[in-house]
Length: 344
Ligand code: KPL
Image (cartoon, rainbow, N blue to C red; front, side, top):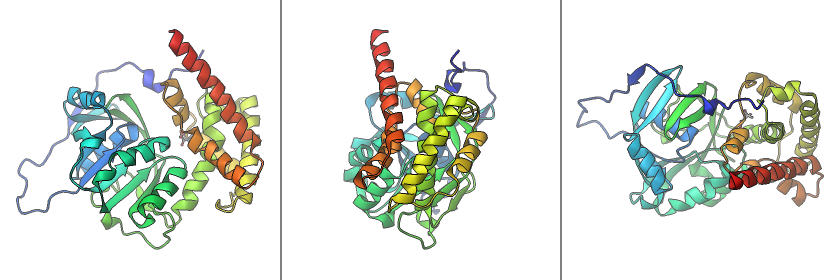
């Protein structure tokens, strides 16, 4: 039997904690930092909640009128669920295309494949002083935004915080983790005061002068794990214990390792199998983000993961047949899923 996705769980009764806002704001105090967030998925909602808790004001930039309706139906609040306690956190929202004031602080939490379109939808409100913070898997979108907007004002986050959406604007914080912040091509210490209101301690944020290396290494792990969890329809931990899946993990790791050793832009990987196993052990009960997206009928990030690695491999005429093979098998499964959906 297919394991139940955590997102299928029925609602329960929870204790509630109200998020209180200072009732008597000091009129002489500087206004709180104002963050705009593109992408109201699990990560967008979690970060919006944390930013408000940190004293910032937040506007969610939504894509469709239906998204706006969800925001109105939710009373203009995000529900943050942590250890069975619910908190309701007020946030503003508007259509991304209707922002008129120049954005000061922009956090992009869309899936990697949507970053370019999302940024294009607010391009008219991005000013020379706008700081753009990206939180995605992979490194392709971050490289391309850094090239387009200038690496000095683009920041990249890499996080192992776990979150999923129970319903629109209702996020479950599933596990604390660490979060790293840095800029591509900038190895000098980062001045985090340029990003006021960032929830440094609540999100375990630390700066990494080599965020590029970190994103490449995480990409290698995601290339070895995410597609296979869909092909085997399994929790992360089952890639350690299921014999056929295990053989595929090891073979894929060997190919990724060889690619990283040969490609000019990638760092050497020190024991990829060890890193993959550590992630699979730590997240054994979780469903990968790619499997969650697949089960919800959403688009996949694989073109930004194994697909990007294959793009680089082709440019340098390197063998990437196992990565191509998982992409091909994934496409077949997706076509079957979509056909079933159209029959239902
Ligand atoms: O980052 C992940 C993801 O799900 O995208 C892994 C490493 C697979 C952990 O679930």
